[in-house]
Amino acid sequence: MNSYSMYIDGKWCGAESGETYDGINPALGEPFGKIACGGRADAQRAVAAANKALPSWREVPLWERSALCVKIANILDQQKEALAEILCTELGKPLHGEAADEAGETSAPWHVAAEQAKYFEGHTKPCADPQKRVLTFWRPRGVVAAITPWNFPAAIPGEYLPFAIVMGNTVTWTPAPTAAATAVKLMECIHEAGVPPGVINLVTGPGAEVGDELVINKGTHAIGMTGSPQTAEIISSRSGLKPTLFELGGNGPIVVLEDANPGEIAAAIGFACFYAAGQVCSCAERIFVADSIKDELVDAIVAESKHWKVGNPLDESVNVGPQNNMGVVEKMTAHLNDATGKGAKVVAGGKRPDLPGFFYEPTVLVDFPKDSLVNHEETFGPIAPITSFKDEDQAWDYINACDLGLTSSIFTRDVDRAWNWAEGLNSGITVVNDWTHFWEHHLPFGGMASNRSGLGRIGGRHTLDFMSDLKSIVFNLGKPTVTRDN
Ligand code: NAD
Image 1 (cartoon, rainbow, N blue to C red):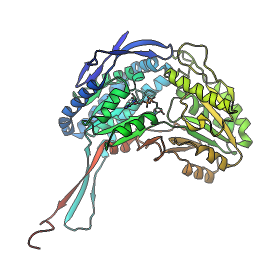
Image 2: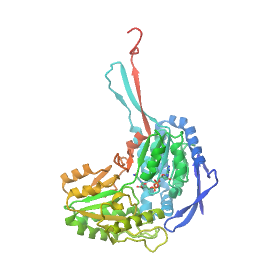
Image 3: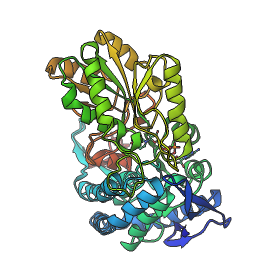
Image 4: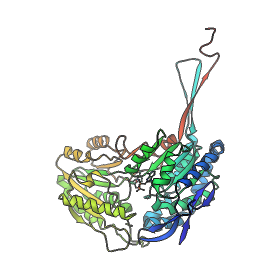
């Protein structure tokens, strides 16, 4: 079995306790490797290393920091087959589809950070006092704690690490325990590119210990976290006044008005529900369709669900891998039982296939009630819950019963109604006439403020913003404003 180490101060190492835990292949439910099980002491070592590296790293010219990000991106591209293999082994992502997609995209944010940092300008500010000149510029925050989830374990670290280091910060990073081997592979690429010791440190282990230590330790100065609202609430209660960026879960509604064409849009909706076995924050998890076209849409989505084949992720024809762990399987079952107990009907899937590992069949659920768990919480499984509405107020009422708001879609050819829905939907991103997953690395992404999908925005200059402090310098020309002479 392979062993996976942590990376602190430029060196590969085990946990101070010597402990390891088993990495589990979710397609088989069997161990594939031994992973260093770090604890608070290891997180403290990582924070100390990041602080030691900070004074010299922040003095490295921006163009050199940017060039390092490009070098890392190039190595990630050279290593994309190996990355896809570990994504398949550790997450069960279908090797020829989802795993290859993510591995192929892993370098993209490193390029975006490298490029955009060069144009991340400060300003000179006009002011009322004719004697003053005011200019603003960006300074690194210090040591950034990056806490990442398991569902896109190669891509999501790229939303934090390159933006942090290109701005002159150093990083202590902890990945989700069920995605640690992928993090180690990524770290190997970063190491190969020649990152100086201490600039990026990786500590694997339980979030409640390693992650918590990074959050509360006085030696970290900002926290970027992608994960569940529940964990973010704990972090928020422990982080004091540190700046925090939270990218959290969603329960994306899709609204389909009566002028949409069910046959034409079913594949996009299927993709929004079933890709990555439904384990994407931007998944569509609730579909609201006008009564007059409900039956047609349900039939089209049931037909679409048959294109999503569950099975061995090494098999080229498979496009639905396993859920990450039994907890996700149990949540899917609980949400289905809750909805059917309240009158909803399963019209496709609805059970676990007869396979080892943590699989679930792509499921279509019809007529879920407003008070059901699928309407209120993120399911994070391969599920398309559909319900119909007679008038739009009824749809708004259902949708607004949920306090998550990351992504949403509206399908209609009526521009006025599309605009009203897009403006009114309580989510950080609304897509008109396409799936909920659209995003590119330079665009802002995140949950709408005051709901439980997040705080702040990642993407391009928005992440650079978070990774920096805006400093103003006020330059007085001539004598001080107040002297003993005036
Ligand atoms: P999670 O909240 O369980 O864990 C996220 C990270 O937090 C992990 O690294 C974990 O080890 C760490 N952690 C756990 N307890 C902690 C604590 N007490 N203190 C500090 N850190 C702690 O989430 P998950 O199950 O890994 O990921 C799935 C969730 O992430 C879903 O809700 C999904 O929607 C969300 N997500 C959001 C986005 C986005 O961009 N908005 C992207 C991907 C995933």
